[in-house]
Image (cartoon, rainbow, N blue to C red):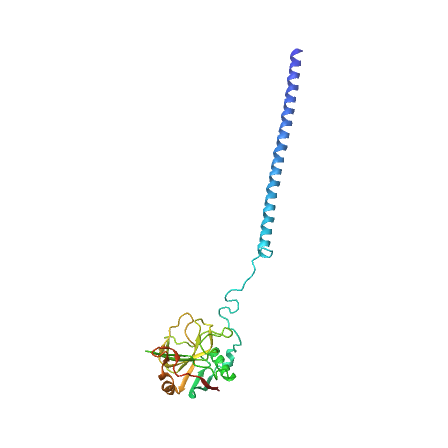
Length: 261
């Protein structure tokens, strides 16, 4: 009998130990799951907060009060590669040959223009001649040097300054060898392909002009008659100051007439 009671007690104690063990395991499992859930919640909360912070920063620095105030760039009013002002369409050149006469101090210079080779520049020049722009404008610059000679005219201010309200491009019909032969009529520029304006020059002696950053100078036509008189009556007078090779003509020169057809 004693042996049977001992066995029952041991069995009961074993069941109680198993129950306590299972209870501890259940508590441990619950605690692990809870910690895992809490950790996931915390991580999620951090991610959400970080995302919100990023969104807020992006908004603040793009469309919100932190956005930089826009300021015009140096080229905002005249982007590279764009005409400025009332530049006529190349169609105004009619893509044909024009004839005309330009008078410098009443010296008649007959010329032809090539609207097929330089339609944009010829359109601009023809339009200015037809509007009467050139009459009364001075020829402010004369270049007389060994292997170079030209007279430049058409400045609105008479001193060769570029007109910021009027410019166009691109360069057309520039000689590939950079040689501008006697009689060539070409458009001056400010050093850029879209920096051409109303100023032009007439080559009075074969002249080599480096293309530079602009790509050269647009040749619009040729003086066909009168270069000799121009040289004899104006160019031969030299430059002010005496002995200079590039400056104002010693004989003040004005465009006294301009026609085209």
